[in-house]
Length: 111
Image (cartoon, rainbow, N blue to C red; front, side, top):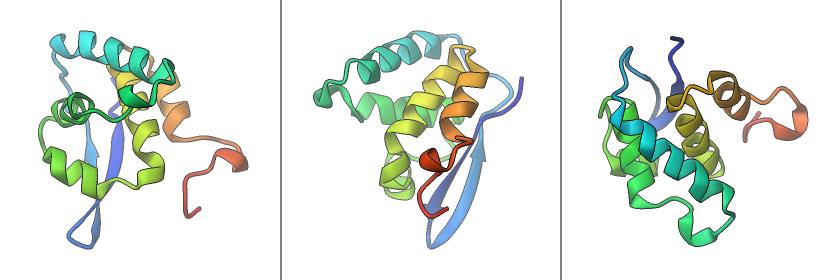
């Protein structure tokens, strides 16, 4: 399965992190809950501590929750969480489309 990659800004440098080749099945249920949270459009269900821990777990705990929160561009935060949840449940194309929009209107900040 193709890895999902995110970029965090840590210690003044950009660092890429990719998902490991194996992601535990236990993360599937959490991914479904996160997708439901974000699709609810309820601001209280956006960017919770559980969602941040989920991201850390999916990427093999290669960074801490604090490093994720401080290293991700705020404008990409929700998109990154949503895409990662889709990736875990097997929606690889959807995850890629969320993180790599093809239209100029959806381009990532700074591009």
